[in-house]
Length: 353
Ligand code: UD2
Image (cartoon, rainbow, N blue to C red; front, side, top):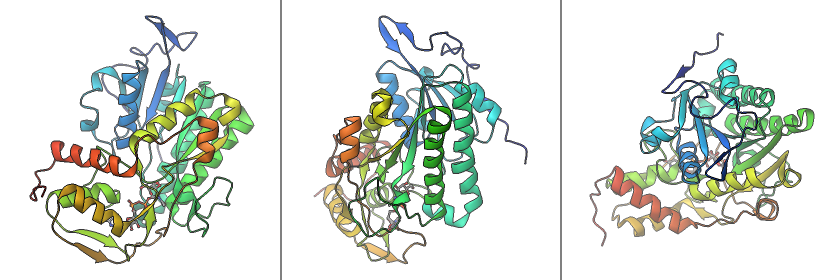
């Protein structure tokens, strides 16, 4: 199959970032600016990372194939990033994208358990082949470090809680297998080629801009927007399944720390990124009810194929080696997310009591 053609948006390669500069990192008014490549930059997590980097005065290049990413996510910052429409299956375009880059934050993926169950080949192309292509391009361009959005799905249904990185993985869905394969490639590229890589196992990330509209959307984006509209949310299964829901700003912190720490502490390693607390879905519905002022009820539907029952992280490894601390807890994250959807998308039918 011929690789998909990638299209440049706005600037040509490297005109905004000093891609060919010998020292890579440039000095700008005395501040050392690194060049970051964010893959999946138009997605919920990628765009949040891009905004955080810009706020710190860093240079951001972003790529996205806009299959799930949305241009609206970049509205306020698009003039300050070098944006290219690139598919991870286009190796030539990835080579151009990595030129002159210091750090790669690899967020691009098709991030859905049910979508991977429906189409395992598509899942493998985007999440495994795409990740491998990116690693080859990053290695060839001699980038300093690649940070990878791995997933808690890798643990699957191992009975022990909390999940520690030294446990044997037990992936259930094709998505989980693909995300784990990506981690193994990360470590392999460190061990075989000396490319510094760090895999961050994200635990159910949520926050502003998460797309609530797809049948594959994350549960909190769906529940919050449905409840704000006064619609009944649907719990798939008995509602006793639990998750370590992690607010997106914590994930941003973990990425920035993973770039900064000494290679000895992190290169070739895997870290849980979470809050270290869990809530079951029914409890979560009740908390949302209170925060939103929703007076309706919840429906129940059949449990999803490939679903994990319980998920909770031990975050001590990330605390010890990355200096990571979750700054925003679950309820605070929910409040911020609800406020964002309220002010950006939703006209609540149910007023707060
Ligand atoms: C998995 C990973 C997560 C991330 C994500 C990417 C685990 C434990 N977590 O999230 O880290 O990589 O994939 O998308 O593997 N649900 C409902 N009603 C709905 C939608 C979902 O009840 O309308 C349930 C669903 O069956 C599941 C829970 O909510 O039990 C969470 O589902 P999700 O799709 O938000 O995320 P999950 O856990 O598959």
